Length: 80
Image 1 (cartoon, rainbow, N blue to C red):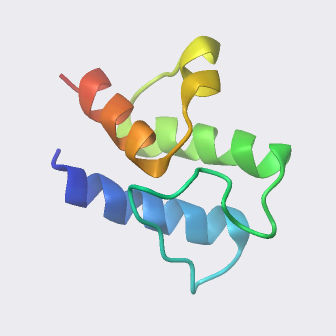
Image 2 (cartoon, helix red, strand yellow):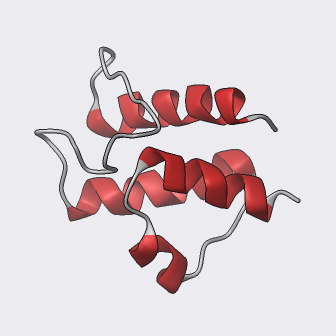
């Protein structure tokens, strides 16, 4: 799956998790760079990403994620 496809999927997940249809994300953005972001949103994001992209993250990997680009790179790596 290409990075742009993953970004589109992540955008839809963010819209759902944050209950905000106006969310726009970019690879350079921090994962939690949203007013309504909290630890529950983080957990929901990870669970939805794992389900949508058919991947499973280790806790160490989740803790190392800082940007949207980091999530995309990890998804690409796991899908190889």
